Image (cartoon, rainbow, N blue to C red; front, side, top):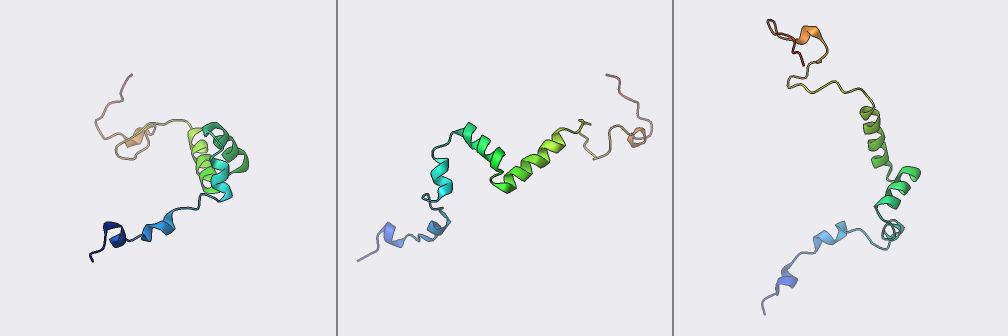
Length: 89
């Protein structure tokens, strides 16, 4: 008798699905976006995401210098090509 589609299917992906009975998911199902953010910021969980946000926060506080296509510093006079004029805005 030929195998059905379900019998032929490989369930190898199942070990990638997290257990929803762990405390992490039990707490998460009771939270909304605001309480999740508050918990994440006060308990630093997950730590990798907290560290990433702190890095971006420090970068955000630096003064904006502009965007270039060649990666050169916009404020340096010597980076303008010879013969170019300073733009007046």
